[in-house]
Length: 169
Image 1 (cartoon, rainbow, N blue to C red):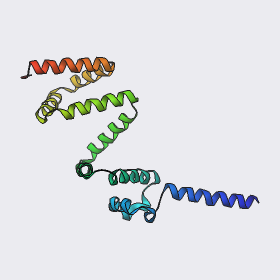
Image 2 (cartoon, rainbow, N blue to C red; image 1 turned 60 degrees about the vertical axis):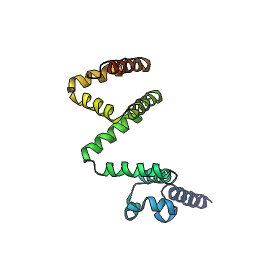
Image 3 (cartoon, rainbow, N blue to C red; image 1 turned 90 degrees about the vertical axis):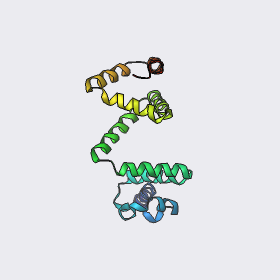
Image 4 (spheres, one colour; image 1 turned 60 degrees about the horizontal axis):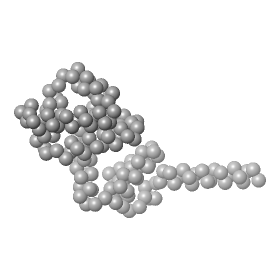
């Protein structure tokens, strides 16, 4: 009886394992289409990474054509980045995911605000940031880090008002 139970446990665990790491043939046709670039390496990809790829493939398949085009453009941009920039972005993404939910929401809100600006204003902000010394950048980071979300918003509002009144700066 124990042998039967043991055998059942092994068989059950193998079926569970297969469910968490499907083989290429177990993928749906749409998943196979989206993931065709990794077909030859699929069995070598770690299970956790396969699950991530499947989620992304499903997201892509369920996206509108415009969203799919945007995803493909981002992927092409990613592929062309140097390895050090990719690593830096991975680190920043990992750091972002460790933030509390309210700070993530605030960061997303700031990004949306920035992306809503006209391209020339975005570039002006980038140029201003690039012109700062590393010490000045660190000082600003520390100053904003210690502020509450309300204080950050008030500081941004004051800065935007100043820029409106002094467009040459």
